[in-house]
Image 1 (cartoon, chains in turn purple, orange):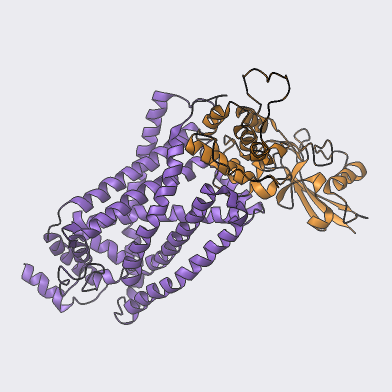
Image 2 (cartoon, helix red, strand yellow; image 1 turned 60 degrees about the horizontal axis):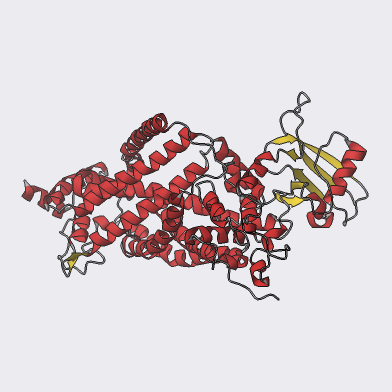
Length: 362
Length: 247
């Protein structure tokens, strides 16, 4: 912890060149994205396992707090991607180092160039939602914000649980292995970090097109507001027909993951690749960050490693399961009931189509 | 011209001065071509004899007067007043324990350096004429840059990875290893690559590029680290550095 405080303070004080600030931004955006990833994978899995929770999570995502966060997220992903490519270039072509500062500027310019139209696209969804739908009455706004924060409480509880598990694991490991050996004069070569160094660069490059495609479809072409409003799912060419008259977030996911082209569930395969690569890349990156600042204590460092491992394992298991299980149509029914609750919370009348759906269901 | 010095000081032997604090000194009649080291001398000789700093040759060769000058690591003997302006802030280099004022304990730094076997290893019998082991100019060129290191620690103490983690072997030690890893006459390259492939070896480098501009000898430090990384990835020091024509 003192190491982190010292590094933050002195990074601000040391007059390093632009490379230093690229590194700071790379770390901040990386940690930001990986934290969002944990939230995102868990609650997307709810669409399959707990449809009513998923509907509420999406309602929370449509609140102003998360709208701001979404813009931050897209910036973080785009910057991290471009700067990652810069790092890969100078790692594999170290003789080009004289151009690294220009490259750092180019990364910033490119990020802004890409973000300008992207933010405009995202903004149009937001404006659409607030103007045409007039979704949330002013006096209900606070309720919705409070609601969306309360919705995240299970995550905080879950994180505390994972942290406790990591501490126990680190303690057990320390009991079995004892203190880490001091750096010997001629220690054995460790192929592990060599592997991770290569993996981070390869996976990073593979993730860029996958995540840009994902962002384009799910945040720009259709935003989080379309999940509960759109009649069609972008990227499915309406093969499965359109979503029912009263769209729900779960139905959106249902249509997306049911879409098959040539017998292949395109989006499930796509999302699976994305899940595996991003989770491992993200949590190994988090391990880099955390172990940098915990090297003073074996126990703290081991806890950090255990924390990243456990979190990655949970995300891979939960996210993988939600992508691999067969989808049942009755998750949509559960979602409809939950959607009705949201309308009540917002103090709005149920749309006729939803009311019809619910009465027909009973 | 007048120049104001703001110096980070600490004296563990004097009560009230154990904790680092700033002290200002005003110097008159300063030439723009005066070096920072000369002015530190003037402060010590004319104003406050207790000011402590390390210097030896005072001509940029021995590497003992590395300090953070106006926020960046520099050798005090190689930096002129006209390059830093009328307000000069001087503090010890970061990441090593401060002993007194601008003097830091260099032992951890040298410990890391010693770990990479910074010496020539070749167990073959000497050439028959008993003279030097020959190598081509191209082969010599591969490690020419990293022979210039004077172990001043400017690079290592400019590195945020080293600030965060004192176990990280650091840029200077990697430069020292590079000098022998890419020497075709040396036989311990594999052993050095093994040493540097451990978790606190080269992999803690995040390609931040603070070290390269910090080097008072203009060594291309980040490039050298990158070449060592690639050599570890490939498992060999052969074919990493493109043999460049001698100009």
